[in-house]
Image 1 (cartoon, rainbow, N blue to C red):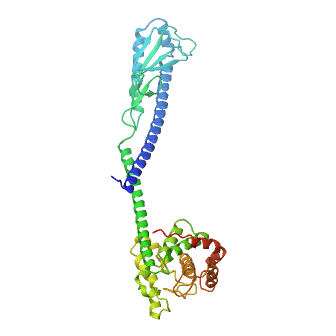
Image 2: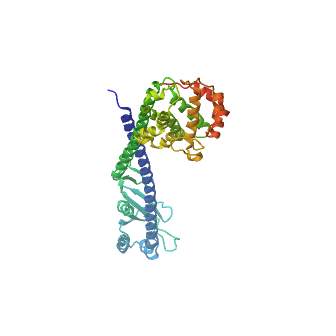
Image 3: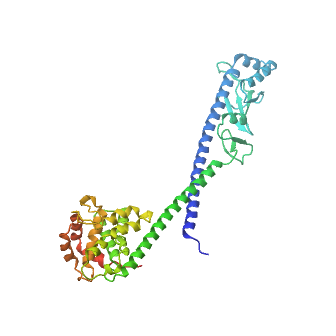
Length: 402
């Protein structure tokens, strides 16, 4: 079964935009977690270091405490040590250990199984002496401390060395919950849907514009085929207008609009009887009046196509002349759109160089001489005169493929 190209393109855009949005949110969320862990690690370390320093100075660096332990009187000392835990809600227990340790500095800090262990040297008050066969041990509830430091996200301590990520003091942590939350997924789908809708709208307008132009082009072609002497006239006028527009500095969408306007400039002639259009003799006043109405008929046709409204002024004014002698509105000079002035020159050139029932075709050089005496935009005509060989090729190489 053949799949609709635009439908499959819309689905592809939806998936691609969703994937890009997903990767973006994933990277942002990952970076956010990295920053969050760094902030937690810093706060955690500072809190533990501050507590260790405070306990070391206030409890394990005192002359009375030092003297009692050196004298072997531990009964009162152990009761005193137990009171240390009242200084912080994070302290699980405090003990005196008889084992001597090589503690560098006043204390060492390590972690394991969700706890922080701080081991203290026991000094006299001026720090000149310490007890080498005994140390103080303070155990901190790392999970409670970590919980107090968090705000937006929740880190949990892992007891296994194989799980989670390195944190500090040999502790490992994991995030509770997923990296991407509900609003992330909603945003991903919304972005994908929005991109698909925009793509679909663009493609709808493109196809609508394309098929309307192709349809009108078919009408023009079929109409001109009823006129043996003006067949393909509009296609050649469009090619010449586009070439003139390029040399005049018109670019991009404006150049495309110029081409379309030139292609459709005579579409209103389908409202004029064929016998008038094919009359080989001199037209009567009424017949010429009917001919002069074809720009109005063109406008009425184009008004039925919303995407073509912006080119209507170019089509309407392609028979206007700088001195006001043109039709249908008698516009003068700069009041005539540049695109209309370009189409006018292309229209006259193609008419003079094309075969007609009442005369033989001129060559471009002869046509240009005639056009110099007409009230046309001389700046545009100068571009034509300066590039005659180029425009010969443009006219000769127009291929009609309907």
